[in-house]
Length: 346
Ligand SMILES: [Zn+2]
Ligand SMILES: [Zn+2]
Image 1 (cartoon, rainbow, N blue to C red):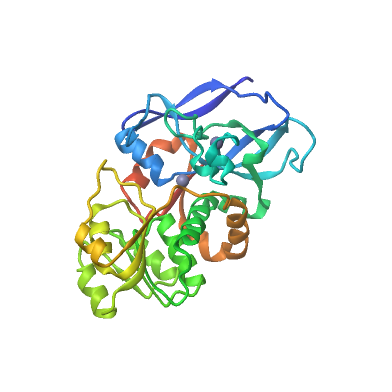
Image 2 (tube, helix red, strand yellow):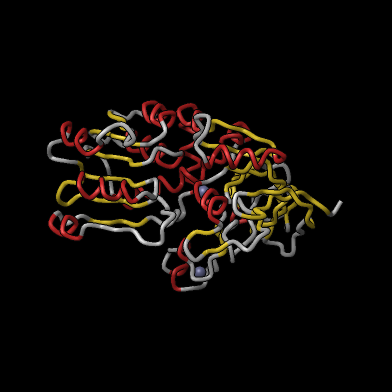
């Protein structure tokens, strides 16, 4: 009764299901959630493949996962609007509310941030039950609940667009057509960009790029991205969203941006150093914008999902049960079988 299942990373490239003690509410501000679905995110795949992101190193075994849809099982107090049976999307970032960053409205870079499934911070949500502060739970309609795990990538995409300060009438390229890149591309189209290009090495993802309205798609494995984009846009492009964490994408970006262009970096590189050509950056006065997840964009992302559900549904390509986590991560990590977003139903 007090046991539950949890999916742990037990070594590089290895996942296991173990029994752990079920968590309990310890304050009126907390809620107990029954986790229903988790999404496999690019950052989870970094931990799966290498056991780390930079100096955030996994201490095995470790419960991973941070994108979750859940049902409220129990509330710490009846105040507030959450009730048992409500469907929620979680915000995996637990901030302190007191530090300089939190006070400045930057809770996403909180000095004491504890992020679910982040080594050294907090265990992840790939488990049957989860206790979270109620402020980290956002109600979602039951009908959209199966799509709810798209809320986190949508929130990050909305935040990246906010930092980019507008794509209307601009020429935009998204380098990397994973779930996040495709949502960034979709929002670019919705916001009235003038021209939209998307690149990826996986053709199934480029098909997805067509669905979100790309004017041009390119696969760097068999196309010369720079030549093709420059022949369509001799004056180069205004904004590039880098969504794949690859050095070659950054190299393309600094060439393809026009003077005064913006490079918005969302991808997570596997390397600990990335390189820029300082002469190109300087001569063209390229603005580099780093995106750290998202800041307060979850309510907006839920609304966005509700109005665009039918267009974004195709992003979830694979569903697995908890018993199939090893296969789920292998498929997602190796970009097999046309995978865009893989999810695990608990
Ligand atoms: Zn994520
Ligand atoms: Zn803080």
